[in-house]
Length: 182
Image (cartoon, rainbow, N blue to C red; front, top):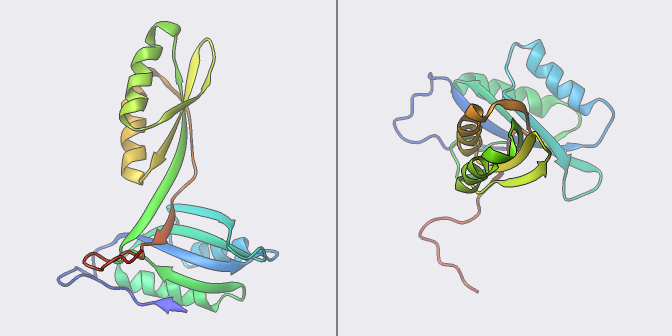
């Protein structure tokens, strides 16, 4: 089942943009390898990919971000739908959706600079999750732009290591102007 892409009026369909795709797949041997192989075999890029359990224990959810114009993304969706263990494919790009990413950022930090790094972390709503005599590890969650900005602000503190999850996304159900009944 594919959701049609709700492209905004006046959108340039020939301009490559980042698309966010969500998939529901069966937990099966080689499912992820088939999906990644489909992308690489056709020369499509994967910017981020996240995989985790779905509502049902036998299924999983994937979020993939990829660059392309509308024709390329339509081809990607069609090819994904043909894969045996793929149950659903949705392109959320033109819909309202929530996306989050997690990054762990380790910076070199002597005790006299901890206050500065902590203040930067606080600005981004991040948490200090590990501390040693010479380093601090900061956990940042949010949209990709927020995570990128936090990493850039921490870069001057001698970035040691960065680990990122990739994007996870889900369509918003709330529609502006809709009445909410409790």
